[in-house]
Structures are given as C-alpha cells and as structure tokens.
Image 1 (cartoon, rainbow, N blue to C red):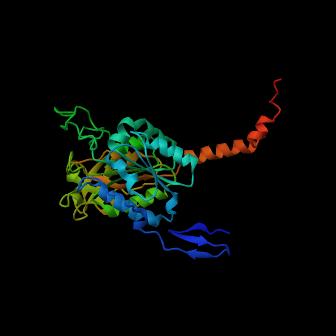
Image 2: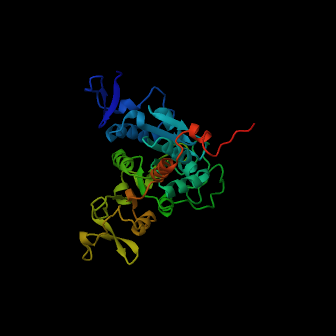
Image 3: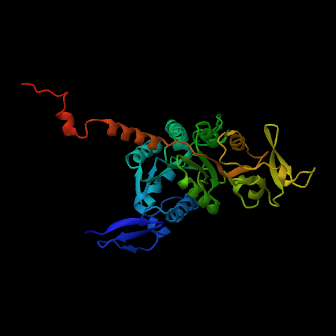
Length: 358
C-alpha cells in the first residue's frame, strides 16, 4: 500500500500502509519561498507584504498544496511567481473572475487574489463588485499605491484629486474611489485596511481574513517608491502615525493618539474627535468598535473618516457571516444530481428519449 499524505494542523503527516502516522516537520516560511528572484524596485512595499504572507500561511493549519494565488496585471501581480504554491497570473482586471472559477471547481483550496488599485478598481471593477456581492469564499489583497506603477506612473481610480502624472500633466480632475465605501456598498462581508509599514497588524488581519467564510477584502496601503513615493506618509510616518491612525479592535473603544487620550464619539449621526479628561469626557463616552454588526452604518462612517479632521482607521472594519456563493452553488448542483434519474452519460444515451435512425 502506498503512503498517503494527511494534514495535521500546520504540519503534514504520512499515513503508512500499517495505518500509523509519521509526523513531518511543521511548515515554515521557507516552505512558501521559491528560487525565483524577486523583481520589485528596492524599497517597494510589496516586499513586506510578500514576507508577511509567507510567514502567516504556515500558521493557518492548511497543507501547502491547498493554496492557490491568482493575480491580475500590475507590479503586485508578480506575486504568484514568488510563492511556492499553485498560482495563476491572469489578464488585466480578471483575477476575481478566475478565482471564482477556481474556488467553484475545487472548493477545498484556499484561494487568494492579489491585485492593485488599478487592476481591481478600473478594468476589474465590475468583477470586483459582483465577487463581493456573491460572497465567494476567496481572500482579496488589494495593494493600493494610488498609481499605475507597472506602466510607468499614470493616475489610477484611487489617485488623489489634482495629482500630476504622465497621463494628467495638468492635474487629475477626477476624485478617487474610496475602496472601503465600495466594499461596504457592494454588501461585502469582510473589509480591513492596513499599511505596508505595519507587518504585525498585517499578520493579524491576514489570519482573520483567511478564517473568514466568504469574500475577505484587505486594502493594503502600499508605497511606490518610484512613481508615488510617500503617498501614505502622512498616515504611516513614525512621527505622525500615533495621531493619524485609529487602530480598530472589535469590542474596544476607539482610542488613539500618542498619549492614548483621544477618541471618537458620535454627535448625533456625525463622528467627532474628543480628548479624554477634558470637558468631562471619560472612556465610557468613546464609541466602541463592533466589526460584527450586520448593519454597516457605523462602519460606513468609519470608512469616510480621513485627515486632517479625523485619524485614518486601520484594522478590521467589518466581519459578518453570510451565505457563500460557491457553497450554495455546490449544494444546488448536488441536489440536481441526486434527483436526476440519469447518473451517467451512458444512461443518458440509452434512455427513453433516445431513438435510432435507420
């Protein structure tokens, strides 16, 4: 009898012919690395994301052969080449569509979509919103550097109003998409935002995204050192991040600031920044984050908070349960197969609806 591989937590075991298991060393970051030279610009934020993903995957308790990485077009979409997993580099804007097909065809796979703000929000926007609406059980990582980096610096749907680029020499007249609003408006069940400068928070978010049943969408604020350097610096710089970021934690008050004395509360339906200890404000007055609230009203308010009036929220905004498209489709197919009197192609050809032509 041949030996069989089985999964045990984040390690692999061999089930031999005698029915006994022989444990193999647990997976490590190196198991997800390969011999390909990583070809991103020195200092690119993509390096941090790649290293963090490779570090997190061994902790998920999923065999290496059960991962698939699907990408579109852009700098970030080189990602599958650098992963020692199954992968597919698709065409521009189509990774969500291809990932949907992969998940339907093989529900046991852990499917990850790697895309950028141009790939996901421009040519791929229609696929994205319907993937979110359907709640396909895939994980989408959108690298947002607010520029088209691979094609040499044209403005993207996420670029700031007025940005001067090779395609907008007089400044962009358009206003950018807010990915958080887009996800929530598409009935997305999981949305998180994290900067590439915080691998610790990114690791926490990736684990939660992987555990989520349905479409998880993680917006990664990523820096393009060549065409849009320091685009997120007002949020991520060491001397500014404490006051300019609000780290969201489910069940905890929305407190931020270098001295942890600032917070967010609602004044009617509008958020406002208050200082704990002033004007009778106490921690009990601060809004408590609820990522599991089905009604996305507060989550939408958080999605619209931006500098300079408010800190920029980071972490998991929303994580709620809802039926998954791929699971419901599979149940539908299984039900049809069970009720169908014909169980093979041969039965179909030899059935009562077939006649012979002479």
